[in-house]
Amino acid sequence: MIVERSMDPQWLSNAYLVADRVGGNAVFVDSGAPVEPLLAAVDRLEVQPTHLLTTHAHADHVANHDLLGERYAVRVLASPEEGVDRAEPLVHGEIVDTGELQIEALRTPGHTRGMLSFVFDGQAVFTGDTLFTGSVGGTQDGFDDLRRSVMDVLMGLPHELVVYPGHSEETTIGREWDENPFIRVWRGIEPGGSERCHVGGAEATLVVWSNDYDGGGKAWVRLRDGRDVIVGGSRVTR
Image (cartoon, rainbow, N blue to C red):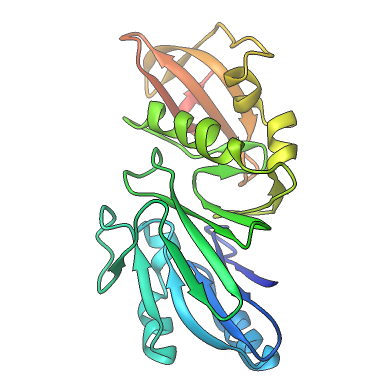
């Protein structure tokens, strides 16, 4: 399996080309990064793109869907909950076969209602904005969904799997199991924090703080009404 990545310099969002072999079939995963490096990889590897897999419908992940769809006539696949234009529905547990690639769709909501992750050949998982290196995706009303997606779905995968996230650098399931601050608290091996803070001027408790993919912070906060949310560190005053 061959993985080529392009990352947008502002959004830090990733778009990927995954090929089964040189001269074989390939798929795109998301399109919210400059696609020129991926187009060049298609030519260099002499592969035939067949599908465009969509983790979720935020602009920084679908910005070049139309361009890729028109250039290669790929089948665009997405969760029906995401509302991606001209996409065929893809649901949890569904298998996509192309060439020598076998891809399983996993429903991993929380950051969005219909977020999908994709496991390729039992070797790698593309996690969209559910799991990052050392962090997780932001939530508003989806905190419980995101925790289940991370702990019950992604952390149940083999620990040697390479994780290709929707933003910034790759990691592994095992590394995140051991080191990710959110996961360590969810596992019960570290206590949550009790520091008082403010989120958008409202009082809250800071449960977890981590570095995020953009060089800032990511915070799990508990609001005064008892709701848990995960927000960008720029929203938190400590």
